[in-house]
Image (cartoon, rainbow, N blue to C red; front, top):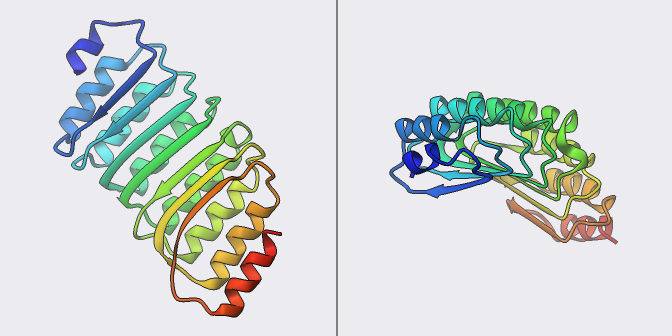
Amino acid sequence: MAEAARNCRSLTAFYLSGWEISDSGARAVAEAVNGCPLSAFYLLGDKISDAGAIAVADAVKSCLLSAFSLRSTIISDAGAIAVAKAVKDCPLSALKIYGGAITDAGAAVVAEILSNGCASTLSAFCLGSGRISDLGANKVADAVRNCPRLSSFFLYSEPLSGEALAHTLEGMAGISTVRSVNLNIGEISKEQVDSCLARLQ
């Protein structure tokens, strides 16, 4: 696949998924698409680490992407931040970053980059990691308040508390275009549920 892309210098969209794709595969993809006028890039590989994510980020940083997705269970803060920096000035409508080792610190930096970059054009934003807690979720929620066109928001994290859920939904309530919000919620009381629903009305 990467070899075929290398011979197609007018490539505008690249899609590849495979659970066995590792850093060497990500580097091969990055080398193949570097210099292509990409508007969409999707790569899923369960063995891609920060090294592969950074290689991809470097390859796409000069592209005017409208959609970007990178998914792996072992990408951590460094890889997520590199990707966010690479695409922050793109006219993105969709940004999806999944990395099982992204922490609150990484989520906070990604959120800050988002706020200062492509927030105005995003309609779909997904950030996933089972190591993001209320702290990181609140930072992300603050960032997406600056996305006036947001339609879909997905945050995979540790189970969120009622307070973090309320904070997130409060921000969503101010965006008229929101149609889908997907969150991982912990145990919350009926009163907290009622309070959250009230924020959406």
